[in-house]
Length: 229
Image (cartoon, rainbow, N blue to C red):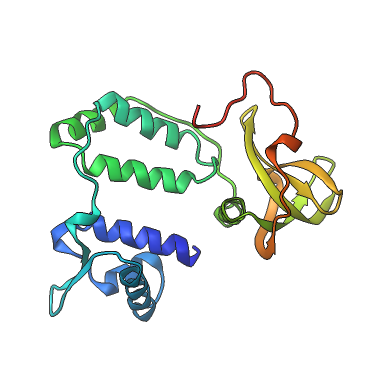
């Protein structure tokens, strides 16, 4: 897990711990890092403005002030389950982990009656999805897209040929149940589609993208739309 992701997950864990708080030792076990690293991460969160409180001594720990939590929100049980179903059914979608964290945050601030009804309804919705692609690969693709930096990938095509390529990420697209990274391939000097499931390794380089736009990808089919639509 990259440090930025760990910091986000750490703040969510602190928020969910409520008034009880959570010890540095327990955080270290949960995130599989040293207690010293946890203290460094807590300092980083506090320096970024997160309202972290600490309670020393036996039974003490760390937590996040209530001001950092969402206020109560008005959702019906069906709306809450719709979000859970959408996230659960698409574990390979870009930023799926952050979406899941957002759903958990919403569930935490529902009133108890609505949350109980949503939990009951959620048990009546099943999903069966194939194993997701490497989390490390997806994390690199997501970071490169968000920061518009060149991604170096090891890719195996349908004919079994494996190559290492530098790609400028332009678009994520889902079609026929598969997710693709679409970007400007330096090896081919052209726009290319890469099936995420065939990307064996990926890392974000320090090189900035040169400015290729989604208009260069081509005209999307009539059924395609951005996720905000």
